[in-house]
Length: 455
Image 1 (cartoon, rainbow, N blue to C red):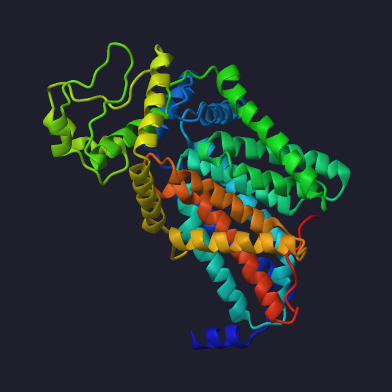
Image 2 (image 1 turned 90 degrees about the vertical axis):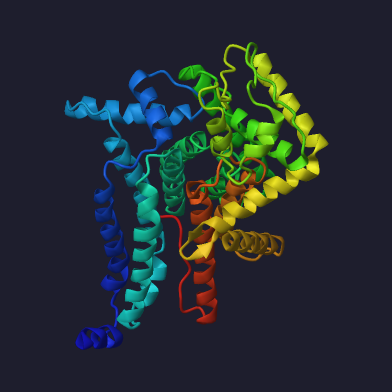
């Protein structure tokens, strides 16, 4: 053991070692993915799997996710003649997308990896160890879930990897650009709160296509493509897939109603479809048994439902498909209640958002620290832009995408779960890592090369 340590400490990394070791870490992580095959399910996965089998889609969960799952299974069945109905093929496809994107990022970082040439091997071993920890303890757990959150990560990470290796030739750009747009389309379609996270990624793509684009043209192009993609998602969901509207926003609306009622001591009953009522729920039972701590509405009503067991406990999710006007009334009543009790509303959602960021960590640091660091990084990027210093927007735009992904949770979040933070954690960590490499390069007197993008 002593001889190995001395060898690592005194040995000098050559070019092959510097280029290969990080990829060895990636291969170990890929092997670890086999342990989780064919992926872990939850109740949402079961619901979407039923849509995969039936081909009948509903919009409580993203229809595009179930449609893509059905598509990859159909392609596999057609090519192999083996009938697969489960999640194995989807698990492999998402893993290939996610880890392919990470491999492309390592490829773009080769100039940085070559800076280890001539340095003691233990430094390269330490760097590779950090990558291995990152892969095994952060990215492998993300890959194992058959969730829309994993699908979103897979699409965005692969798109980012392609953008960091964007071709310089016109034919190459014409080939890669549509692929990036398709990946961003998929990632956004499976996560509704990714609507604004998409904007910085589109800006990065346009700057890869045409570096030095003026701010006005960049903003115009981004907004045009953003609107087109959102319109396309809506058309695919309801025009192509014919998804049944189930009004999933009701989960947020009902949660706000009951939390505001409890906090303000009021008992406003949310409107329901015709023929429905909140019976037998009464005001005294609500204030005795409502659990204000959980965000997820079913958990908040658990004690109430237990009290009413066998008496027709309140149903918290309702079918508005036959009475869409009732949902419009519900939404109007919700907005009116928020306006009337705006201070309480802000207090409730501030606490939920802070709890979400404090509850979970990534690489040993809490979400609150990532949020603060992301804000600082984005502010630095804007300052450099104003002063016309620095010509690589990737770390700042990706970090901004992460912030815009998580910020909608400050207004609406159905529950507090770590999977809601996947892209936020990764995007901010990506920007911070790039900034750290740049800082090391400056402090080393320019010895460390910049990360080069493009091929």
